Amino acid sequence: MEFTIQKSKIRIVKGDITEQTTDAIVNAANRSLLGGGGVDGAIHRKGGPKILEECRQMHTGQWSGGLPTGKAVITTGGDLPSKYVIHTVGPVWQGGKQNEARLLAEAYANSLRVAAAKGLRTIAFPSISTGAYGYPLEKAATVALKAVGEALKEQSSIAEVVFVLFSEKALKIYVNKSREFFTSD
Ligand code: ADP
Image 1: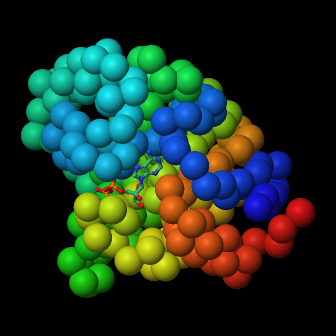
Image 2 (image 1 turned 90 degrees about the vertical axis):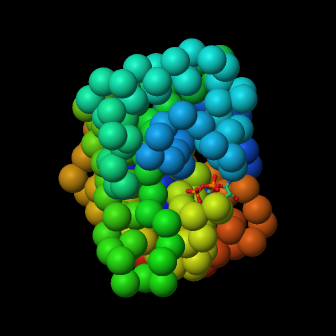
């Protein structure tokens, strides 16, 4: 499934984000930046120790208290096919009244900002917060697609954003939601 937002493209695919060959892949990290389960674990396992070392340096540097929810930082991609990893922290779902939607939108927008600042043109996202952090998939898909659509209107330097969904269920939800927002090619 593919959509065009001005000069940029949004693609929605099923797959494993660690296999993507985009300029950067986005990691749904936790505040510590020191690795975890889910997509975070998969990225560090495949990317090797270099990514973790760069994260550790950040943890002792600017983000010594941990990376706040909604913010994003960039490291190299280590042994991954993508050159960079953008680490962002999505919100933990707490019922929907703790600014979760705003924070999730910020995680997407800030990741794209970091990518654009580095001159990157193609970025792959997982479905942030919808694993261990418990954000309901349908709600998360709405926020993610809207946030990326809006960011692409401002950041025309980014040529392509790929949503890489890990399950058939997530894929279907993102495809259906995207039809509500965008007109397909
Ligand atoms: P969070 O803590 O932000 O919820 P998780 O990693 O637990 O992050 O889950 C986020 C989403 O990433 C989930 O929908 C999960 O199914 C998906 N996921 C897990 N592993 C991968 C992978 N290798 N590639 C793409 N998506 C993945």
